[in-house]
Length: 222
Image 1 (cartoon, rainbow, N blue to C red):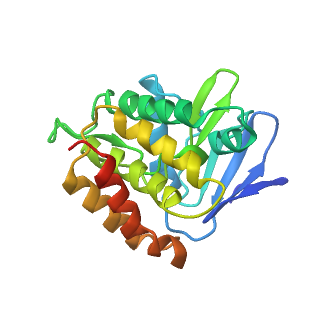
Image 2 (cartoon, helix red, strand yellow; image 1 turned 45 degrees about the vertical axis):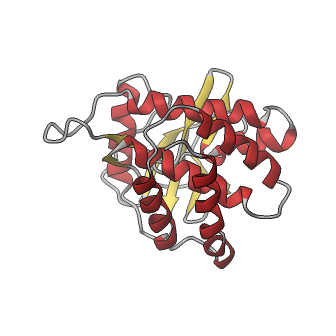
């Protein structure tokens, strides 16, 4: 197991530790992911020009060594007023389009693309050199419409709630859905089902899935 330094932050299922000025270690606490597979996907999309942190090769299921980035998450930038909600929605749409323009990895399914499946404001770091997309633990190959649906349903869960982020989430969602995309009713249904099966969902987040799905259906152009 890789030696860790100072704890820099914690998420729902992982902790991030300092290694040195250039690298950090993300360690999965729950054992749900596969860090080696995740790192391989990140290396693949980076080789094709997609904005992700550098990664070191790993054979571990729990430990992933990543480039240390400097800058706020898009979520932090939203709450501090450094980025407007409409700008955030436009950026998320651009990152999705850019990802799905990369060549697929499965010759048996030419239509399949690398999907992030968790692209939302807390998984985008705004560095001085541009955005970097992090947390590829849910990644898989599949139809791009599912990626758009997952981002939409995640944003809609926040928009359907009653918190300080509700209003910005509405604007981000509206901007995202205004962008032409391969989102379909079937991929939206699948996205809701995947969120419902996600073991990290809180009871409140599960309650919001129905209103969130309806919110997306009302605003999407299928």
